[in-house]
Amino acid sequence: MSTTLIIVLAALAIIVLYTISSYNRLIRLNISVDEAFSQIEVQLKRRSDLIPNLVETVKGYAAHEKSALENVVAARAKATTATTFTDVAAADGAVTQALRGLLAVSEAYPDLKASANFLSLQEELSTTENKVSFARQFYNENVRSLNQAVKTFPSSLFTSLARVAAREFYIVDDPQNRQAPNVKF
Amino acid sequence: MSAPNFRALQASNQRKTFGLLAGMAVLVTVVVYAALTYFGRGGIGIIPVAVTISLISVWGSYYSSDKLVLTMTGAKQISYDDNPKLFNLVQEVCIASGLPMPKVAIVSDTAPNAFATGRDEKHALIAFTTGILDVMDRNELQGVIAHEMAHVANRDTLVSAIAATTAGAIALLSDFIMRMMWFGGRRDNRDNNSNPLALVASILVLILAPLAALLLKSAISRKREALADATAVAFTRNPSGLRSALEVLARDTTVVHQRSTAVAHIWIESPLDGTSVSRLFATHPPIQERIATLRAMESNPE
Image (cartoon, rainbow over all chains, first blue to last red; front, top):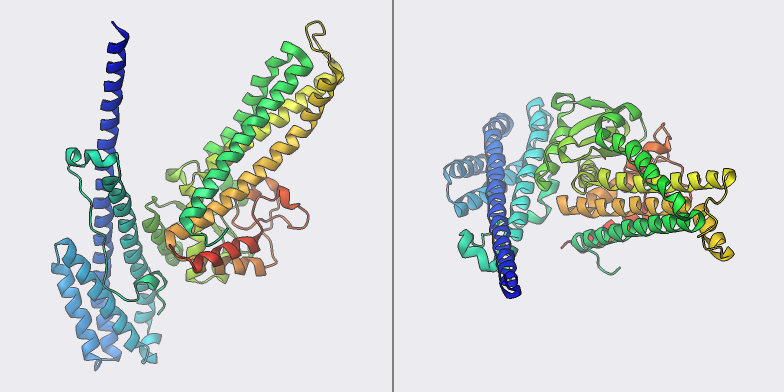
């Protein structure tokens, strides 16, 4: 066997190994993004499940805050039927806003705030709101890694082979989003 | 250090840890070289002995660290119903970091403190004193939990085990050689270089090496603490929570009752008296410096 042949074979082996590892990395990153998205959905479902209880509790003390209550109910209904990525994100933003509005009006009702039901909901609501927000952040962090791999050379060479493309960030239309992890009631 | 953000801080602390571990490797080489200079080839047999003893003693505590530390600190493992708020907070940080849920334990002690241990993320354990749960609000606790989970994510139990093994091996080695000097003197006089300067230098190296290893080990521990602060911010994107938690710890004058140096390095705030331990040997960076770094991150989020 000539030296040239050995060099060519070695170069081929390196290329094949590199292709495999790049391919696998892209697939892994893509799966992480999917997993991160299902985590968002899990947390959104949890929040959805808390809302009826919250609405009933607030109604008992502040029944005439109709618009705030209806906003939450309507936003929740929309969120439960959302299926596509953009719909889920938009509905999530609407629920976040509506909940914040409802909690803001609750501030004016000391009896409500002191009620046992509301107090027990309080911890649940803060942690759920934080979990939703961290799940969004984790998703975006994963999209960031994936997009970096998809768009930078040389991993960008293998995107069509792995059928992996850059993904969209999960953006919730919410002016207060930057402070979302510190919800205080 | 102008305008630090958590990504830059994480990278720089990773680099510094690597540099310090490389320093440890150089130190080992120097010690071995000094031993060979003094004893000739005859001394080489003790090197594997020292490394093995050190490995065995550290590896056991590394492998079962989650169980061992429970007994050493008197921590009690708890479940969700014992403290739903604490579990919720830990779950939040798990979602933010993508780490699996660790075991959670409570140490009955009024001094506010916390620690993380476990050989990998699947065997992680984080513990809190009853004091820290009493004095800190939700936001501050979230910062503390993020710092502890950052230790888990950065595999700091492993890093400190490696540092401890190397420092231990160096100490044993220099101890062995010193004893051999007392009893046997130099074994192989014929083919040894008898340059007196080289001999004096090798004795000096053997005396100073354990001290240098200890300094390196402490420096590694401090870099890992700084790294954990930066990683915690990467998880929560909220430097003010951890910053205000550290301010609470700085104001607090009580210390955790056990002052065993064996587990001192694992707490978020050093339980050892700051004045008695010099800065060079400290396992943690000065708390005011950590607060200042976090404050700088608050003004520079990304």
